[in-house]
Amino acid sequence: MLKNKTIVLGVTGSIAAYKAANLASMLKKEGADVHVIMTKNAINFINPITFETLIGNKCLTDTFDRNFEFSVEHVSLAKKADIIAIAPASADIIAKCAHGIADDMLTTTVLAATCKKLIVPAMNTRMYENSITQENIEHLKKHGFAIMTPESGYLACGDSGKGRFPKEELILEEILYHVAFDKDLTGKKVLITAGPTREALDPVRFITNYSTGKMGYAFAKAAMLRGADVSLVSGPVNIEAPSHIELVPITSAKELFEETSKRAADADIVIATAAVADYRPQTIADNKIRKEDKSDNTMTLTLERTEDTLSWIGQHKKEGQVLCGFAMETEDLEAHAKDKLERKNLDLICANNVKVEGAGFGVDTNVITVITKEGANHLPLMSKFEAAGEILTICSQISNR
Ligand code: CTP
Image (tube, rainbow, N blue to C red; front, side):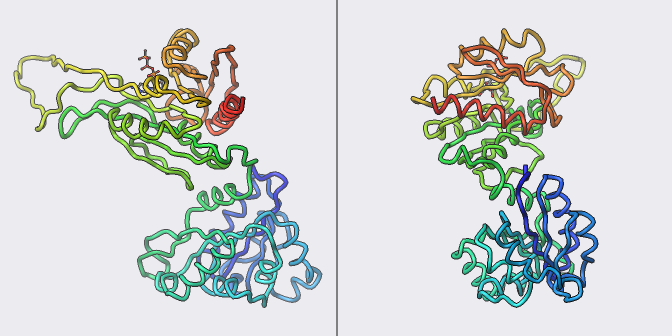
């Protein structure tokens, strides 16, 4: 995702510097040309050779003997960088950047660069929360720097609080947000439903299904990285939502209907991947249901239909709006999917057979047949993220017609 991109990774004197090695490696694996600039203090935490081995480029430091042939490097790097990410960023580097100080390789590169700059603070809570650091951060924001918020938790110094280096995956996502992909969905509002629903029986039991939310979350990430304004209405799942989106957590089919239907009118593209319960228990018991007749081995539940959110959106479809449904089937895939396309007034439906290897619940891949009014397009086995990208492109083409 970062082919032909030049990324300068600034590493400063923080214990989290060792985690920057993993980040550098992840950036390299995404195809980027990665250049690491370390401050003098960073060298106390991690050896430049670690980065050089991982990225295949000379690591720039402030030691004269390592650097003499690269003395003008900061200017050329500043020119060719697509983004400069300082991760981890100490309070010291934040203060220096905020005041235009340029007294080493990293700060001179930052000052000479016109590209996007990303700061990933990692430090002791008190240093982070100090009003001077906070003022410096605000000042940097005013100058167009993107700043990530550190995580809370146990810190290496023994304190607990805000200041932890975010997970490398999140930093990678932030870098992708700024420099990867054409932002062809900018200005488009994309509404996505994802995950399972839970229909309560009593205070301790519910009816649900095997959906993990992976497909819907892949859509949210792909759309966000292409510049869309994303709302993700999600049932209970165990995956972290992408950054820069509106996450709307729901539990039941009723809540999914309420939250999705009120956002539908504003959406340019609606993608319904949620595995919504079609029926819910007619009554929810106030107390735990007990085995009444101990000799009876059966139990009968009375269920009632839930709201069909996608059908409702189809009935209230706005001019130019694109509606994309999902149909997970076990037999007669295309026939069932086509029926849903028409019945729910959709523009396209993505059909997948749960019994096909690499498709279905819980896996990171899918084998999808995209059915539109014009016909069927069989996509090969691919990651859910790639499949989401392909389907978003089809949605965007229909939307721009
Ligand atoms: N869907 C929805 N609300 C529901 C049921 C389904 O929004 N109450 C959406 C799903 O998110 C999916 C599409 O409708 O995008 C098709 O869902 P599916 O369960 O396959 O279809 P059903 O209409 O429930 O049809 P059937 O039970 O006959 O398979």
